[in-house]
Image (cartoon, rainbow, N blue to C red; front, side, top):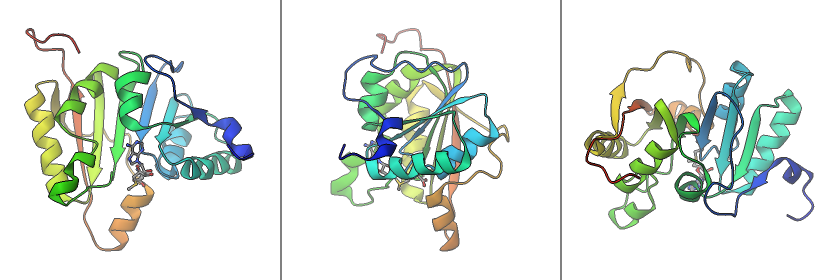
Length: 203
Ligand SMILES: C[S@@+](CC[C@H](N)C(=O)[O-])C[C@H]1O[C@@H](n2cnc3c(N)ncnc32)[C@H](O)[C@@H]1O
């Protein structure tokens, strides 16, 4: 960890199943949080909630920790982890109220599609870690990625589209602000976790 003092605030997740059990009563996850501008605004608006901020790039998490210190925010847990490892293995069942996946890299070239986080196999993992009626929130400036996410979420039969309830009004991520400044449109979509369909073989 090269002696960075911010690393004392970062949880480095390298273990396997259920190696991290969030303690908050209401718990949200910002998956691929980057430098954590969105996470910080969310945590400041809802100081009683626990916000998990996950990213694979430790340098971005260190910036988040500096911001937390600067702004006196304490209800964020920065997690240095790979998203599929976190959601697929490290988190226990039914522990999250909401997951945000905001402006993820769209990997527009066909041969790179496999790098996209949101593909059909991931929907079952999102479903596993969300609580009953939990929400998955996705945003992107990339229309083909948004369309693909809507398709896999709807076809999964594990989620149904919902309207936003307004509690995130005015909170924007770094990348969303960047795309808006370039004149692009960023679309947000929300899905509610449904009960498992009757003939599913668990998760
Ligand atoms: C385009 S940035 C978006 C950051 C932030 N959500 C925003 O909207 O400003 C994507 C972020 O996801 C992180 N990331 C990409 N793939 C990841 C993975 N497999 N696991 C965890 N983080 C990942 C990157 O390190 C980067 O910080």
